[in-house]
Length: 114
Image (cartoon, rainbow, N blue to C red; front, side, top):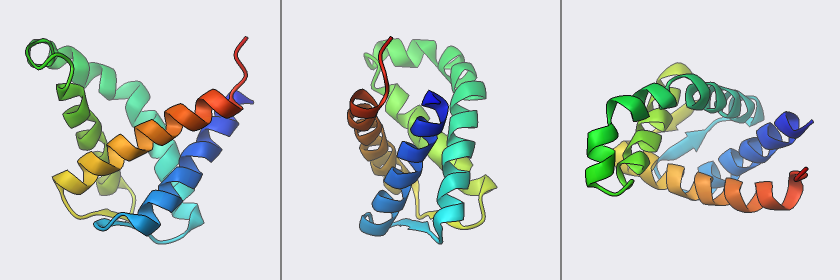
């Protein structure tokens, strides 16, 4: 059940951020659901590999390079989904920061801690 709630939270945040952030375009709700699913899959399968490959840079930047990795994940999601468009790296960077903060807040409110 938590997975469905997390996907729903991400979907809602993608729609809201897509409406208010310039440089991010989400055509409809089906696209937002696809973005949530693809970002979840990319975070599960690709992000650990990218983090592993960039450990030295991440240590030197005290973890701030993880924000760049998140932006790259967003740009890769843009490549795979037709109705989702990101204008550039800085739009993806800002989108990933806002999405992460929103997910943190909403997951702490709606997800059961057992």
